Length: 187
Picture 1 (tube, rainbow, N blue to C red):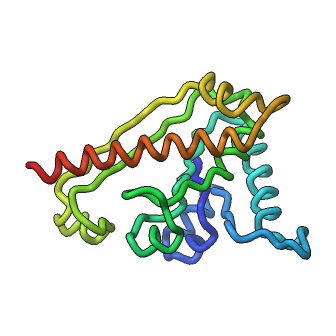
Picture 2 (cartoon, rainbow, N blue to C red):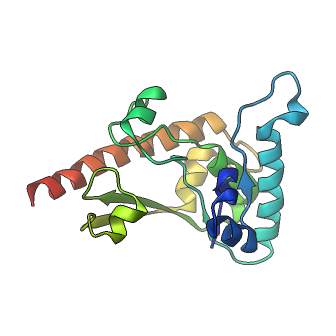
């Protein structure tokens, strides 16, 4: 299993070392540099991702991509003007890059939705017993659905259709989280 990780995780004690030891690609996830594209973090991230995917193709690998990009907080959601009640805006770039590079070899995408029964879930609240229930919903998206919605990587790939598809999935996830959260409130 391989994770695409933010470069900032490199500096966390133990976590950064584990990510480095397992050869997880560290991504900057920065802005595009219009004046000097060769200095752009997007360009560097693209190169890092391409190297990692080439390496992953040599053996079987499961690639984990957190499309939301960060944990949800009302402040962050407000700042980015998220149209969702429970989610940040999705960042489809990683998924699109993976699809463009290895779409013909993908068998499926597993879409996880994790909902906690407590506000502001974090590691310390979890081990302290303040998070008592966690619900995980899993959707398996067959590669054929991706090909129909993204286009084929080699010929008619359409990033705008891919982004639209991801946004539709996010709307479904937001409604799903609302439903799961209401189960927590009633019990």
